[in-house]
Length: 85
Image 1: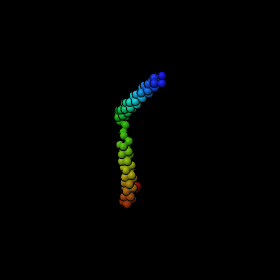
Image 2: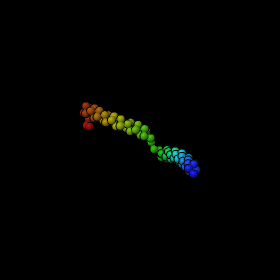
Image 3: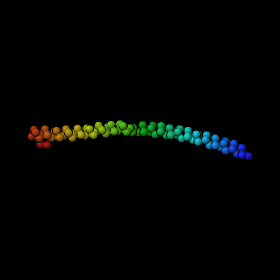
Image 4: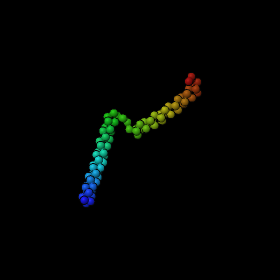
């Protein structure tokens, strides 16, 4: 009787192990499908990537600083020439 119970339990353990492996495989497959779908949706919405956003943000900041510098320079030149600011 003990040997029969052990075989049943061994078989049950094997089935559970196989089921857990199959569930992990399904999980990986579902994650891959979801990731691909999400990437496609974002691409279709023309959402910019973080790296591109940060690059443009840095360019805008540099342009703003340069614009302020040039405004001060123009004001100084106008004052030097005697024109109203």
